[in-house]
Image (tube, rainbow, N blue to C red; front, side, top):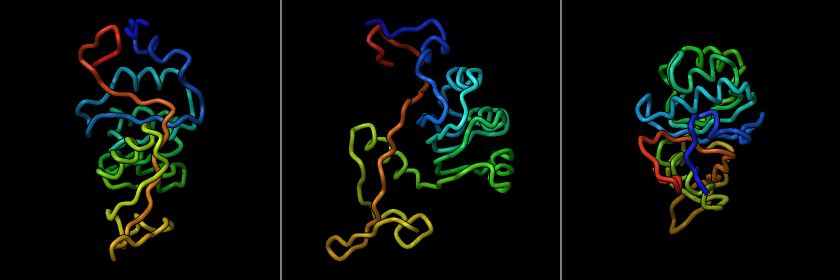
Amino acid sequence: MNKLYPTAEAALEGLLHDGMTICAGGFGLCGIPERLIDAIRDSGVTGLTIASNNAGIDGEGLGKLLRTRQVRKMISSYVGENKEFERQYLAGELEVEFCPQGTLAERCRAGGAGIPGFYTKTGVGTKVAEGKEVKVFDGQEYILERGIRADLAIIKGWKADEAGNL
């Protein structure tokens, strides 16, 4: 099966739907899948949950999807440079789940591997742990983190082969 597509829109054809969860790669504005973000914006899907280390900035990266109000929930480790994100969050228009960077990466990995959850020390005793199951192993507290089961993961690639390897 050929996994090369002529456009981002063609690559996403038939995959997008309202209310879906998307894991988005990149760090800040570095290595983000700009063309795929634009194609998602242009598709008009709404009610998205996006798991990404950040929410972009105003008008760039995932900020484009926030500006068009296509995002219902952000699961992020950092969101400090997006005024539209801030405005929507403070107005109660955007649900936010803060997650430490390493935990976020592991939650995405676990979900992709079919692992429903795992225990970590990261976040114990902080707001991150509020409402989460706590378990003691070897005298140490750990919190249960759930894997993130995304409907779609988007990453940036410079070059691909016909099998889809980037």
